[in-house]
Image: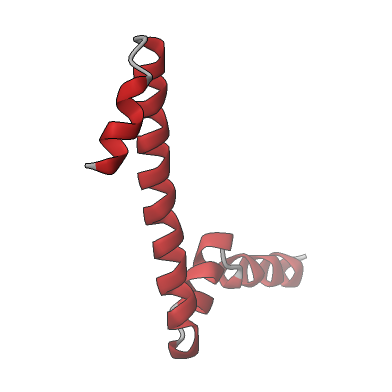
Amino acid sequence: MTGTLLLSATAGTQQMTAWGQFVEIISKPDNMPVAGALLLVVLFTFISMREALRNDRLIREKRKDEILSNMQN
C-alpha cells in the first residue's frame, strides 16, 4: 500500500502541464523562428480584428463611405 502511494506521489510531481510542455518545446533554439512566427500571427490577428471592429462601427453608423478613405490614409 505504501509503495503504491509513493509511486503515485512521484508520478504526480513529474507530470507537466500542457502549457509547461509548450513552453519547453517552443523555447528550444531550433524552434525560435516558430516562436517568432507565432508572435507575428498574434500581432496581425489583433490588428485585423481591430480594423474589422472599426469598420463594423462605421457601417452601423451609416458612414460606410469613410471606410475606404480611412484605409488609404
